[in-house]
Image (cartoon, rainbow, N blue to C red; front, top):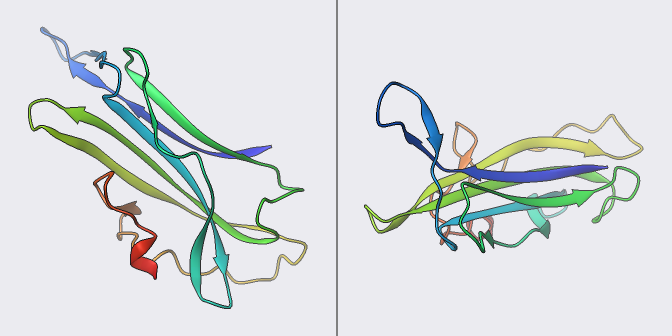
Length: 144
């Protein structure tokens, strides 16, 4: 079994020294999502295949995970090229805004024909592999 996973962790600097410690966040202050995309060769776009949806912490926590599970022998959207977008944010009371971002996994071929060339990464992916910084923006909309 394979999966796409997004994990967000909250840390803070210790009062003394250079150590970091977990920063407990109240319910609703951490958010994560994992999205599975499949390349549509006819339309030449990455299409959303499966998503974890946006997951938030329901209790005080310092980390949160969102997962999309799949199996290589039963890909949810058929054979072809797949990639994931993992996103994680924490709400900052100082800036009154969500802080975090998203990252593209790269692509992986799941098919009986291993001779296919990989597609280009999504147009909305930055040169460093990141996607939009705000949980309110949708990377898929930019592809349409």
